[in-house]
Every structure is written in C-alpha cells, then in structure tokens.
Image (cartoon, rainbow, N blue to C red):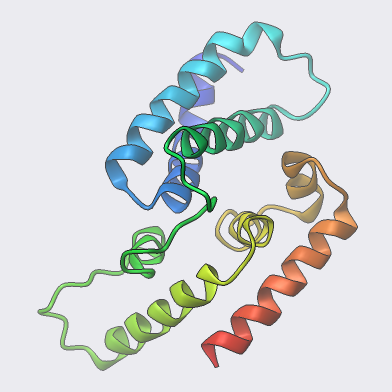
Length: 169
C-alpha cells in the first residue's frame, strides 16, 4: 500500500480516535497530522509482523498518550467540559437550538448520560469501548492494538458496558 492509500484509508479513523481522546477539534487535527508524519516516515521500518492497520493504530495510541503526558493530563480521556461533545461529533448530531424534534432532544439527553458514564470508565475500558463500538473493530484487532489478550478485551468491553448501563439507566 502506498503512502496516499494509507492516508486515504486511515485518516478519518485516526482523526476520530484523536478527537475522542483529546476532546478538541484543533488538537485532534494537529495530532492526526503528527501521527501520519510518524507513520509515513516510519513506513520503511514496518516489518509485517502485524497488520498495517494495527501498526498505524499503535503509533496513533502511543502518540496520543505521549501528547497527553506532555500536557500533564492525568486521565487518558477527560470529559471535564460537556461530556457529550465528542459523542455528538462522532455520530453527527447537532446541538443547534433550532432543533425542535423531540426525538433529537431525547438523543441529546442520552448522549449526555453516555458522556457522564464514559467519564467513570478506566482508560483501558474507554479505549476498548471506543474501538469496539465506534470503530467496529473485532476483539482480536483491539487486543493487537492495545497489546493484550482477547480475553482481557472481552472483559474490558463487558465491564464498560455493565458500567455504562448502570449509569445511563
């Protein structure tokens, strides 16, 4: 796969991951560019020991974690502002006051509850939840990206869903 295809195939996914983790559009864009700079410059060292997809995601996760450490952010994901902002961006719901539709208002309430529930998850639970539910990755792929076992991922997903159901209900 050439460099243009790599960017084309993974840019949106990596941007969504960065946005989910950083909660800021500008920071997510900047960091996504940094991630692809690293990916493309390191392409020669890719040894096909894993899927290219897994390798790109590992670089992205490590870059995001390092960025957050440099900013001295203790938590991997922070929902200190409006917790539903990232969820709205990821699934494309507008917070426009002109929304009169009762169904959209109900969605917004559910998103706020989801954001609050996500705040209560551990870093690993949030990451597994993101990959499984937003990226629709298989558990094996998540395990490869996170550097753990499939059974650990199953447990993280189960725990995250159990906690979310408890807080959203």
